[in-house]
Length: 120
Figure 1: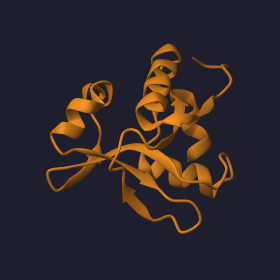
Figure 2: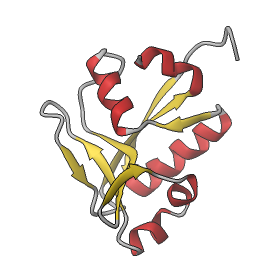
Figure 3: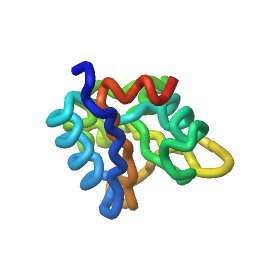
């Protein structure tokens, strides 16, 4: 993958469920992943993405905060039925919140693997 241009793509405009599905499709096509809490924070700090709130692939489940498994993201309704929750990082204050609803407005960032250099 050397020499390829780095890619970061923001997905927004629909519900959490819709935008997550679009982001996962893009990530699979481009050998990427949905940005984690730490990656979103770093991208915002470096000015690579606008200072807004973003959903992340970091989740809250059974008292733990961790990176989501791909199967959980692909089956997000089932994950929510088991009381799992996607987290999102707010804009200016960088507060961390749980996304209670799959039908509220969604915004995610897809990151191609070589773009990770931009974050560091």
